[in-house]
Length: 272
View 1 (spheres, one colour):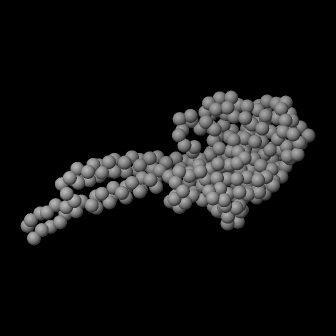
View 2: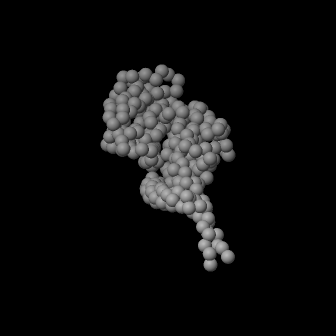
């Protein structure tokens, strides 16, 4: 009698590891167009999930004062491929992100919609250390080159005659809550600017901003739920990196073993 020993399961397991590895490395990046953290009521905005792998099934979700984890196309927005288009109302202020079927999420964007007459156009996503950042204070109906005063954490930074201010070579000390004021028109809501380390390869979730200034007209402050806090995401990211390393090592060992045994034949005949 003969016993047939097959080595195919090991090779099949290698394919499973490849599949797991590809799922682990899928990522998406949320982009906002026009790129700003503040908008006037009625402004049009397009949010997109720029994905490495469309098979991951990324969808765009948000948290607002009225809804939690609501998906684009359910009660808000119109899906258009990997994008979501919407005309903003006051209740659309909140935190937006992309989420896949497997659970991972992208960077987050905190959008503020105001019914007031002044907004501060500032980066909606984290900025990298060393970059230059330009802030623009603008009104809804008048030219956007009016003299404006800029504030950080409640303190006056400077007054600019043309309504825009550039922070050169930003550092961690530039993180904070920014707003602006145009005399005779009013004050903008406040927005948090996050600065990331220049060695960061993928943008981390935005920091949870402190409560918006109570003087900001018709704006709503939304904070991230505990389950989506940056600290938890950081831990999950580290665990994911370790898992990827282990999977790579196992994959290399199994592939080498399959290659070494292949010349001996797909099966071995053992008499007993």
